[in-house]
Picture 1: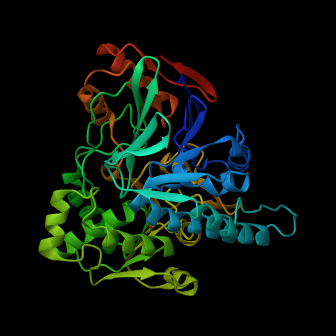
Picture 2: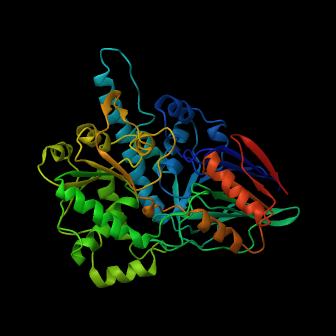
Picture 3: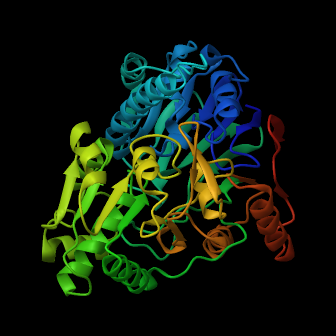
Length: 467
């Protein structure tokens, strides 16, 4: 069967992951993520698929982050009705992530429309919880490292990607006139140096590689520095009697931060600080983590810690907030505290309300612990904006803004290069996705300088026939 790849998202950017693999008569979509960034541009991209949804034979999902999974309900609304394949852990997480995405869209639209009632400017949710319910009925969960059939002469398996709980590289094996061909899509690739996750495995005999390049130009700070830097930030905020607001991805980053704070308090390195995890989704996801503490995704070191010390996410000073009224009261509490809230790029959810109430206070610290995509509020804050709009209203930025790259669950330049060098034999072709132009170009130059001469940086909707 002839093979063709077309890249419809997450090229020249890091959101909206969508790649179409055509294998003979089969049409497989690798990921179906939401585009995130400027509101009007993102809505336009998300609503309009460049292919017919009902022409797809299956979706293969790398993991549950919304930039990889969040457009699935839109796909179903547009007519898709086949199977959505993912790992068992991702199936559990997607249920939470997608329902929360629908809820956040509804609440943000309601609030936006309220404060813009006089001008008549309105926005509508992309999809509803009913749409999510229909989507979840199509999910087909699989264990790691077990091939499943997609059709005659076509099969796939999920391999540990080391990025977040349940994250997987997707390996597809196809019978072609030239023999078997194996395509590997890394999804988001994890690091060798991790806090909770097992590092990614390197499979043999890959002919075509599609890999992320989010940090293709950068090298992360080692994770062992996290505790020292976080201790300094918390101690200073405590002296200033200030609030630390952490815009945190509910999946993985929140659990990592709670885990690290638990260790610091247990060791006596920081005072017992009130920590509020203000995200119903993060609360539910933490329950999924506790359910899957023995997952293939989890590192042996983390599993040993859990066996020795018990619940890694249940320290006595943490409070998991679900109730909206309790969430609102967090901004009126006196004294030093830490608030973790979604979304991680400040593009929706309760974090916007906490920023709106605290961003103009000079004893507030806004601590970013994850990648901020171009066009997002998070990116503007990290880049030093002095004024920002929240719910369409301007605010002066008087808070201290800090960025900690140490937490990143994405592979950095060295990790990606290590992974590619380990592939044996070398792939016939490598495609770099999920990275802005600067990072992809830098990684491309590194690979070509080391003898990898068949490397592509696809453009939106660019097609490639595979040998």
